[in-house]
Length: 219
Image 1 (cartoon, rainbow, N blue to C red):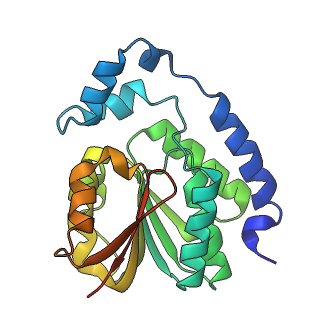
Image 2 (tube, rainbow, N blue to C red; image 1 turned 90 degrees about the vertical axis):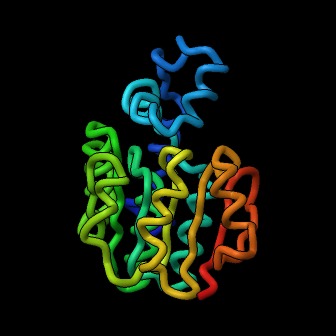
């Protein structure tokens, strides 16, 4: 039986997705669509965007993308995973469930907003997967700059879209040949998308569903 589709994980995920769908952000609602788009592409104001305007929103992967993450981690036998953007822990649960079913491993995940990290830790405990997960709180450009495993099997990028390139730069030399990089909302990070599809960056990359980019490290 897969950890993902059995208790306590399956009913917990169903509940969390429902909660995520009902979450509101009054601060974000007060900002115009043009200003939101500007902040989304700003390399200097992402802390305001994620620490103030988006702090009440869950920003989860979709259920389909969560299943994809489990599938990729499980089928590749991943043992070391790094996640950029914990939020409330929905994607972390999918990845940690795959680690459990792979026989164990380590997920390092990082979250800018402390309250989200606290809530994610509670959800991982409820799922019975917290022993596989290390949550780092703070800016990923700092939290993922130190104490990384020698080899990384899978990366999920799902934090500030403008930082996808920078976070990948921190991790790239540790990605083994065949390692997978999954980027959610990749359409909001055109520079990253262009890099991964260029053919000269050492990756083979394909779009999945509406806005997920799945890439494999070739060498």
